[in-house]
Image 1 (cartoon, rainbow, N blue to C red):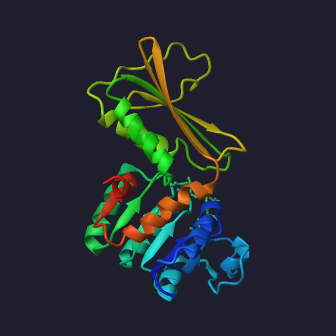
Image 2: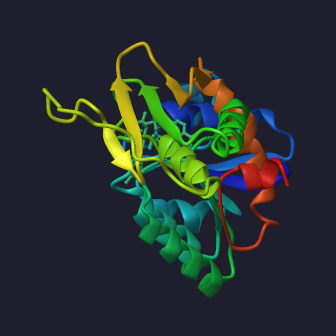
Amino acid sequence: MSGIKVLVSGASGRMGREVCKAVLKESELQLVGAVDKMNIGKDVGSLIGSEPLNVFIQGELIAGLNSCKPQVVVDFTAPATVMNNIRTTLAAGIHVVVGTTGLTPENLQEMNELCTQFKVNALVAPNFAVGALLMMQFAATAAKYFPQVEIIELHHDQKLDAPSGTSIKTAEMILAGREKQVPSTIGEEKIKGVRGGEMGGIHLHSVRLPGLIAHQEVIFGGEGQTLTIRHDSMSRESFMPGVILAAKLVCERPGLTYGLEHYLFQ
Ligand code: NAD
């Protein structure tokens, strides 16, 4: 076995299991470790419906890093835990690919400093699906021509944070791409919060329902016209080409990168 050695953190979860499957299919990557609070001691093969892999779920990240010696950690855990995982990984001199959402600007600043201090690299991607990245790019382009926009993001009902990292990144890209933001009208809210949350004058709406995976609509409004840009992830496989690309490239892209578009489009 050869290739970049990868440890998956959150390996028992919905995304973590897909990542394990995707890494196993990729000849340039090698799955050497798996960490999760659930299914400790189980062979990863039994979680993903394959033959035994001799890679067992470990309960503590630091133990996984010490025993498996990965070059890259891919983290799909939970907003409450991700920052500690990042600190542990970077301080151990190991590159990290972060899919877990919920990181704040202060967290990103700290990651930047840790990358410099420990001379390691990190990629944080609110969304790994190429279609979603294109949706954000198209929205940033449209932002110059439409001063008003609202974002509706729709996710499965087990998602822990709202709004989604993708909607926040989209709003940031729209705001960066325009000279002025026309404040949106609110009117009288008969039900508190019915006009959604607000970020820099852009209204964000979060829908949580069983049956959904990850979806987003960016709706621009102008005189006599609207422009809707929509992306749908119909399965978690949609994220895997991006995760695999990130795991391969993070070793050679210095410092912190925020957004997979910087690996894909540049
Ligand atoms: P999930 O709940 O199915 O899986 C999370 C896993 O992490 C669970 O198995 C849980 O036991 C484990 N975990 C929690 N705390 C841990 C800890 N301290 N140490 C080790 N393991 C721990 O969630 P999911 O649907 O797989 O999503 C995971 C994260 O990925 C969420 O933040 C979600 O928003 C994000 N996500 C990102 C993208 C993207 O493209 N960036 C796509 C989908 C989901």
